Image (cartoon, rainbow, N blue to C red; front, side, top):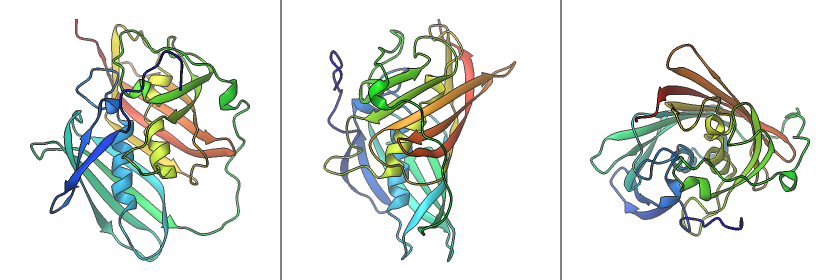
Amino acid sequence: MIEGVTVPADYFYEPLGSTPTGALFRSTAATAGPWGPTAQHGGPPAALLARAIECLDEGAPRQVGRFTMDLLGPVPVGEVSVSATLLRPGRTVSLRQAEIADASGRVVARAQAWTFPEVEGAGHSGVPPAQRPAHGVHEDPPASWSRGYLDAIEWRWIEGTINGPGRAKVWMRPLVPLVPDEVMSPLQRLLTCVDSASGVSAVLDLAQWQFMNTELTVHVLRPLVGEWVCLDAETVIGPGSVGLATSAAYDESGLVGRSAQALLVSPKPS
């Protein structure tokens, strides 16, 4: 734990039981994003969708090679329901889908994932970052950002800074589980962190601008090993309202995957 930082909850989601099509959860304050306490950061919902996708049984072990989440509206900090289905079964690859709906039944997030067989293969996933988590430093987030998710993650900055613009490299690890008494899968741990690439590498004045991602796409080379995720992140802004945040995600052994986010860039309301 970090001195002076209070973790806002013991887990991200509290299970409330099942429904005819899925499961009910109550999100805790640990899911709240930087723009306010009533809307979730994209990381925990991505992980919750991945959990539902991973629970689908096709009779043989599979690993997710590509995960795409569309955010169809703010994901509320409160009660949500999750459902999952197999869209395209296959002997080798398959396409799965999961959705999160708010208390009214409106779908607010939808994910699709291509899954691949779990087999031993040749290849190498890239050079690991030069510096380990222990070499990074903690930084307090900007005062204008809402806490919640920010305090449910341990941050160790290697290059760049959360309080300044530009490309950055940071080690991250969730301090609480996704749900009580359950160890996060490697994919869930990765997705809890990788949605932060746009904030890690912000290029605009955080007090005057907001940049909310409408989607998250992650190509996953292999399962994450260990607790820590390193994001080597960069954001570029177009001449209008569109931005693009990308990252290479590492563990301490090497490259795990790459992410991209389309951003809606707009001035903060006065």
